[in-house]
Length: 608
Image (spheres, rainbow, N blue to C red):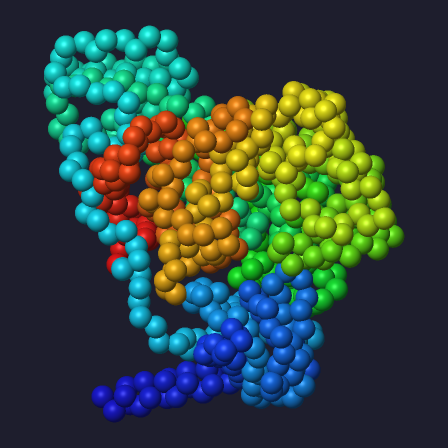
C-alpha cells in the first residue's frame, strides 16, 4: 500500500504546486467609512510582468491607495497593467457592497502572444446576518383545492350538469368537460385554445372527477423578454424557458438578441456580426478590439455566443409548437455597440462602407446608462438603413423557412444618451430615424415594436404613421401612451432580474426597487394608459451567470406576471381581499408549481 500512498501524496503536492503558480485574484470587502465609501482590497497572485488583468465591476471608485492604477474602459470594464511580476496588491475606495453578486468578477489575464486566460477569484465578504428568510415572503399560503393551477381558470363547476355558455368566445378560449373517469370533451375557439386546454389538463390533480372548466386569456399578448446579449443562453436553455412559458400560457418570446455587449444571431453575408461581435475564441483581445469584442459581463471566453441560422429556426419551431410567437429585438439607435464595432471590422476586411453604422467624423461625447461612450448609431447615414434592411430581410427569411409567423421586429429605441449626435438637431434625427425604419417595415409588410421611448416627442404626422405599423410599445418607465398599443412591462413590477429583497445573498439589481412574487401578482394593468394589449415580464441578464440564475429569478416571481397576463382585472375591493387572494395564489405555488420545478431540478427562490 505504501507506493499507492506515495503516489497520492505526489499527486496532491503537484496539484498544490500548480495551483500556487496559477494566476488568480483575491478580493476582500471593506467596511464603509463615514463618507459612505468602503476600502476594498484586490490582490493578484502570480501575474507576469507586462501582462494586463481586466475585470468587471459596478464601480464608482474615487482613488486608489496602494498598487498600480486602475483604468476604465467600456461599460463596467476595468483593467490593470501589471508593472511587476508576482503578487500585486491594490486598495481602492468603492461603494459599500449591497449584495455579494455586485463584487468584481470576470477576471481575465492578457499576455502578448497567448490566449486570454480566465482567472479564478476568491472572495472574502464581511460577515453579515442572513436576512434572506426574514425578508422573503414565506407564508404556507391558502387552502388549495382541485382545479387550482396557475394561471387560474376563469370558471369551473363540479358534476355533469352543462355549464351555461359565456357567450362570444375570445381568442384562446377553451372548455373542458369531464363526464366520467375516462370520457372528456375539449372545445376551443382556435389552436391556441386547444393547446391551453391540454396545458390545463396536464396540471390538474389526478384522477380527474366530473367537472367543467371554461377559460380564456384577458390579454392577447402575454410575453416574456429574454436578454441573451449580456449573458448568453444556449439553445437547450432557451427551449427549457419556452417549456416554462408554455406551462404559464404565455404566447410571445420577446427575444433580446442584440445589444452593446454582443450580437447573437447569424446574418448571412455579414460574418463579422457573430465572428467579431459574439465569438470569443480568438487570442489577444486588446483595447483596440481588432479581433473581437471584449467578452460580455461575466468574462467568459473560449466559445461562441450566438445562434446560427439553423439554431434560430429550431428555436422558432419549438416555440410555435407551443403556440409561442417570437419577436426578435435588435436594440437601436442606442445600445448598438456590438453591431457598430462589428461593421467597422467588416469594413476593415472588405473596404466596403455599405453597412457603416457610425460616422468616423462624429465627435459626440456621451455616457450611456450602462457606461458606454460609443454605442449610438449615426442615424443620418443612409448606410444605417442599408444594414437594417439586410437584417430585416434575413429575419423574415428565417421565419418563413421555419414556417412560423413573424409578428413584428422590435427595434428597441430606449436610452439614447444625452450628448449623442452633438451639433445636430436631436429631434429632427429621431424623426428621420423612425420614418426610415418605418420605410423598411412598410416595404417588407411587417410590423415593428419598441420601447415606449420611440413614440415620445414625435410630430403628429410621424406619430400617426408609427401607429399604423406598430405592433406594441413596451411601457417600462411611465404609465403609458394614449392612443398606442401598449404592453404593460413596468420595471418596478415585471423586471425579474431585480433582486427579491435587500439580502446580501440575493442576486440582481435594485435601481427600480425589489421584485418578488407578491409584487408581480399585485400589478394592475388597468391603471396604465393606451390600448392595453398585453403584459410582459422581462429578464435582463447583466447580473446572471448561469441557467440556475435564470430559473432562480424566474421562479416563483414570474408566475405573478403570468397570472396577471391571463387574469388581468382582479377584483380587490380592499387590502384584506388582496391578501386573501394572494394567500390562495401563493398556496398554489407551494403545493403544485414548486413540485414541478423540483422534478426538473430547477433552482428557485423558494428553497431556503
